[in-house]
Image: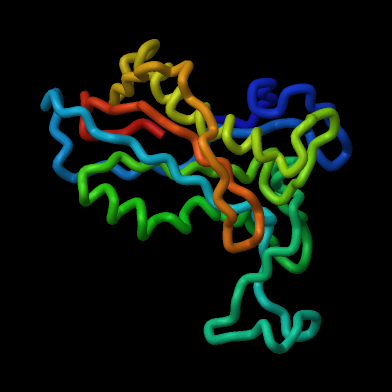
Length: 210
């Protein structure tokens, strides 16, 4: 979905020159290969959220980057965050591209899908990635914002199917009981909200709308 202001995810956000208060429902869904149309099976859903990383990267440059960072093949250097705040990476040279952190769960999403789980890997780049705070938002580290963004994804999928006859059905049970039940410390040192979910999914088609 296009990036847009969302008062649920970033309540009270005030736009600045570096942050336009927009976030986005985006990511990747992994489905079990055994899903059949109208098979009556309820599939458990797992939602994955990547760490709090900068959102624009470039190729390693030995002229400006530390030698100990080099490897074979050369690494990508993620050192800008313009995409998170304004929706595009810096232009010119060096060439920057958007960091697709959510794709880092491909290995896990595919494996879990093979065990019968429906897996949603959330892209938290827009409006949240790389930021510890947003103007007007009382949420240092944007921990609550990350948790709210996680919940917005299955909620949005459910809305699509209820209003437009989409390709999968997500049935929320006791939706109002969703709570953050704990925090997990990521490898980069950020705190990750862990939501409790009672969502389940019933397949209506073998094609998932994204």
